[in-house]
Image 1: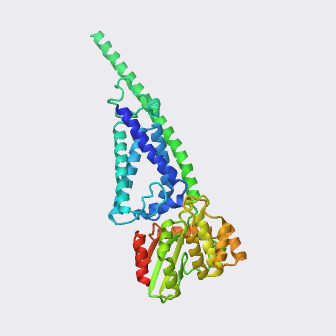
Image 2: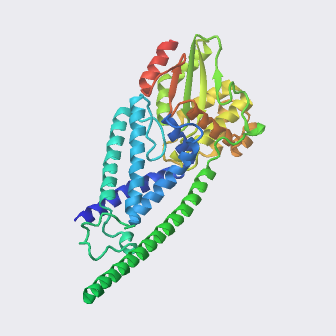
Image 3: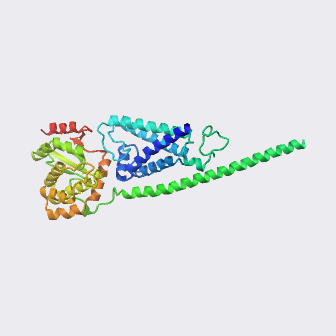
Length: 166
Length: 248
């Protein structure tokens, strides 16, 4: 059962990341502006982060879709959502009126307050799914199951806390 | 005794064998992880350079690629500098809310400029190229700069008015260059002069840099309106009303 929940968690997080990455990828200059709008990072790193964001989202998204190195990838994805939540919350707290730029095209939304709340709620949900995957990284239909076959002595899915036993 | 010792060494051997097996498995797992990480890093690196390479922001603009008659690097202030009300707007020709703002306050702002009541500082940008299939946003800005460069601020103002009155819908194919030339001529520009500037999209890099400057200015959307230096916020209807109050 847990493994099926894990599969759903993987696919949901992967779906969000891939859609976000695909919608951002064609507009690198826009992504740089979206990162800059948060006014959190020094200008020297803003362009690099803006250019790297869609690539990282796509890669993390596809790794989750395939179920490859699930635990480690879920840690990375979770840290990302944490960073996004902090960014949006701080923009909100400072009274900045920006579009999160989550799905590209940073602009000013009609009702920024409401938009901030929605964005944070969504990222909290995605963060929770990542935490689930870090705790129970064994999931159905994952490449991990082929590359790192579970040990016989472990009851399927139970007690197998680590995808990769190192 | 001997039997027991034998048994012990047997179990030791079994343990050693198991440890050896586990060691091999760990090695194998690390190698698989390493291979995946290397593959991901390679793919990611290629994607990053594609993404970064497409962004021409900040590239130098040649003198022929820089519009004339600007009052700043990326803006043109129109109206008497002694006018009591100073308005500053950041607008995109493709932005529908900018169009709504122009419908509410555009005519009055042009009148206030003519009457010497207001000076309007236009910071035109183009971040909505993806809202049309033909990068209308930056082509329209390029055309507006062609008009400004060849026919001056009054013609630019007229072009600005025409472009908003005929704004193509978001998601459409925009309008072709030939229509932009028509608008430019209608605004008072010389057809022979503006046509090569519009067809050649000669100010394109400038439009990219102008848009980046908006972001550097701390402005993240359009329309953004300032009255005497004060940002009017995201409520464009209130902003338009405040503009009308300030210039009446």
